[in-house]
Length: 193
Image (tube, rainbow, N blue to C red):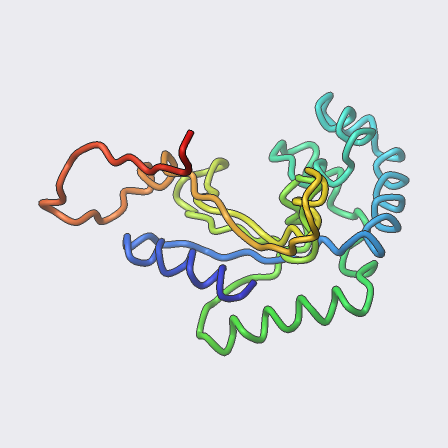
């Protein structure tokens, strides 16, 4: 996990982008259900303060409410239970190990307890690289661990970690690009089809 985070950071640093790294753990199939139950109970008591979208999310995927950028929802979730309190020993140790490796590599980060990445397939590590000057839509790259995603699509168990980069947002951040780079069309063949 730490190596993938460092890879992403090095790419963004090569563009002279001023990024901030946020990291968290969303637990796994053992500890996350207890948190979701506690969060849902809390959100039900604050329903009137949530936007329509978050009231819908509360039923479908309560973690997504933590991802909402609306000010009213932010106030409503301020005192929500912390996911950190529900992490099992293995998930807590995993997060600490990732953080220790990032510290050892000299990479600065902030643990953000409300960072959930909003997608059900993530397990344990989640992270985002933000460019503060871009306002509310400031995530340049984000990712995490997804140990069971391949299985959900019928494949063999394949633990994995990865990230995606929003190239449009990277361009809005005004990266330093190499002058004189060749322009053209690049084609990558993935298979015979």
